[in-house]
Length: 223
Image (cartoon, rainbow, N blue to C red; front, side, top):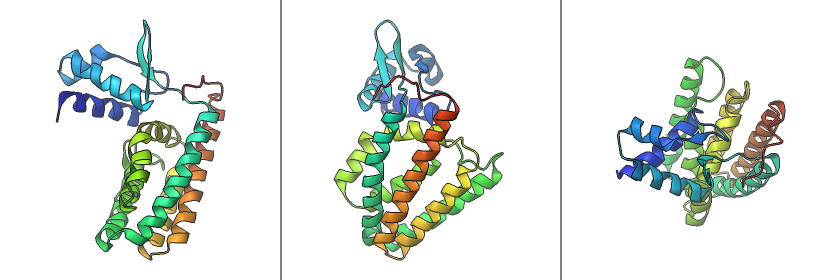
């Protein structure tokens, strides 16, 4: 792995674990020190993440994690709902049987992780997103993958790291995942798409409720 790739993955990891949050400054020197690399690869990683919209560069300040307001989240989730519902429909038709079985195994692991945790939230990190990525890959549609799995990946991950903290959402999200997985396993494309759309809408409403609770609806719009 190139050093810039390593630095990019590390910054994403810090955000997924909520060690960096919206509006937080990304300290180039600290990250280089933590990874024991020079600042050059870290600068390249920051440049890449600015291009995806995850970071915002500011003169005389450096870079910070983007902050999204309610309108930005609404627009992001409108796109996500449409494309991931399509991906679920296509996955029901195109996923192999081993891939469908792998979804069940993945969700069993997620359930065990939630049971082992101190709350019923999805564990911090990529856990919940891994399920969605598997379905995006299973759709076998490079355009849907490029938009949701690549272009919007960082913004979706940032938003997910926020609504994952809502108490009561983890177990509900897991059950919704299981319903989607069952529809895909049965090859019921219409039901899989419907369930995915409802799941994304529920996630959106959870996030917006959390933002309102924390007084975040006044965030400046960076997207």
